[in-house]
Length: 241
Image (tube, rainbow, N blue to C red; front, side, top):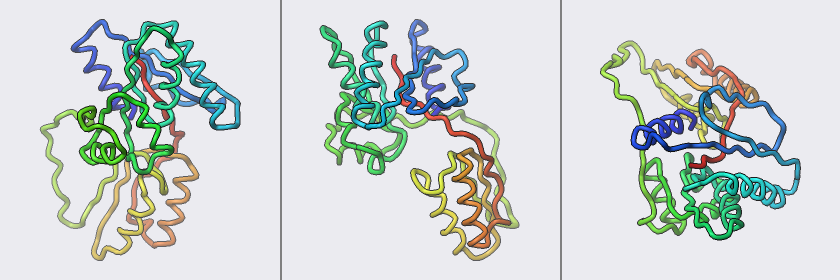
């Protein structure tokens, strides 16, 4: 998500050099996330110690309203369902202004927490045709959905196919279950006959990685795996343009 959002900002600035993008994060705990990827990007963090989920979301919405009032915001892009909920409350509290709300989910809709909150948005960016279909099934007007595939940089280098074994490559965040379902991948690979290898490129929480290491040992496939370096995951909630 960090890579995609940075690329998104660069593409915006190519077309509109005067545009300003500011990220806003919700932090339920006083943690110290890694903000290196935000180099030269404006951002702020909102904190709340309220334990009740509904009251905490209202607290965030009030804080966000203050930010929206202080800045001349043209649009809000929410990156998950809770961000849609909070942003929708915040914009309604600002009288005399109509701020469009765009939902840009980066994970499956069906597995999202409080997926009905996505319906609070006016428009939608879908990173795949599958997510676009899930939004329609949720009740979103397909005319308000715009499919924007994640940007990639074209390369002329061709990686040769290994001849002595079958090599699989996983690129992404490391989750035991949840969005990525690496446990399912491990279990599936354990049932494959022949010589194979899985290269894992990504980072994740230590407890998730340890769970996967234990599963790999249980499945007797640990010697066929490479990668899985542990580091703290830092997730942002939404961007304001």
